Amino acid sequence: MAVHHPDPADALSSLRAAHRARAAARPRPLPGWYPATAAGLFTLGFVLLGLSFLLPQRLWLPAACLQLAAAAVLIGHVVVSHRVEHRPGIVPALPRPAAWFPAAAAHLLALAVSGALGLAFGPAGFLLTLGPTCGLAHLLQLRRKRARADAE
Image 1 (cartoon, one colour):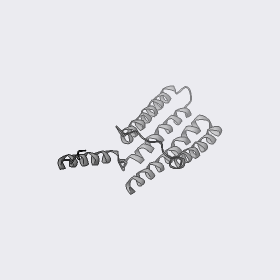
Image 2 (tube, rainbow, N blue to C red):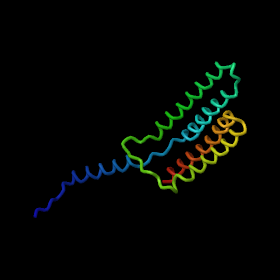
Image 3 (cartoon, rainbow, N blue to C red):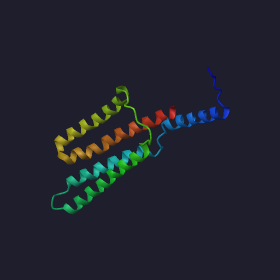
C-alpha cells in the first residue's frame, strides 16, 4: 500500500480554493441605501396607483399617466431588489419557519389594515394604505436583515 504525500504547493492551492469558495458562499451585507430605496419605491408605486383610482373617469389621460408611472416605479423596485439580493451560483435554502414568521406577520398585519380600509373606501383606500403600511414593514424587515448581516 502506497502512501501519498501531497505536494505543499498543491495543498496550499487547495486551501486557497476552499477559502475562496467559503468567501463566495458568505452572504454579502445589504448596502446602506437599499432598505430605504426598496421601501420607498414600493410605497411610491402603490400610492401612485391608488391616486389613479381617485380621479374621475373623464380624466382618463392623467389616470393612465399615473398608472404608467406606478408601473415604472414598481418595475424599478423589482429590478433594484433583484440586483441587490440576487446571489449568482448559490442555491438559497428554504428558511426555517421561525426565520420567516415575523416578516410574514408584519406584512399580514399591513394587509389586514389595508383590507379594512379597502372595504371602507374602495380600491383607492386599499392601495393608498397598502403602499405605506407594506412599505414600512418592508423597510423594517430589510433593516433588521442588514443589522443581522453586519453583526455576523
